Length: 125
Image 1 (cartoon, one colour):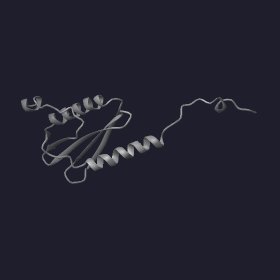
Image 2 (image 1 turned 90 degrees about the vertical axis):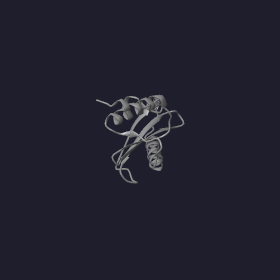
Image 3 (image 1 turned 180 degrees about the vertical axis):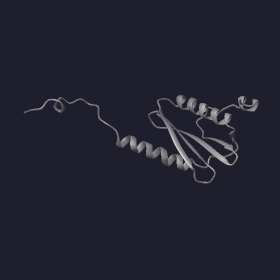
Image 4 (image 1 turned 90 degrees about the horizontal axis):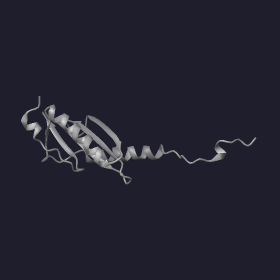
């Protein structure tokens, strides 16, 4: 059961990175949005300057969906003893930028043309 403190915590709805702390563990959740409005959540966890765990979730068609997913994740972390550390600056922003660039590059390389060309179907024997 969550404590009264955890139920009253206001989880920010901005797109800024969120930092949570618990017994030396740090969790950062970054929201990145591309030029077409597609959003991705990137989460980092660790005890040192380099994250020990990295994961991403998405793509979300709208940033509001990503914010909602992030709020649910943060609520679960709060339930498990983490606390929002709004005074702590994010330290893994460069890692997030590298990771989102790699995700976007993969998306570009995997792009498929859906244009129909009859010559692709009918063989001219």
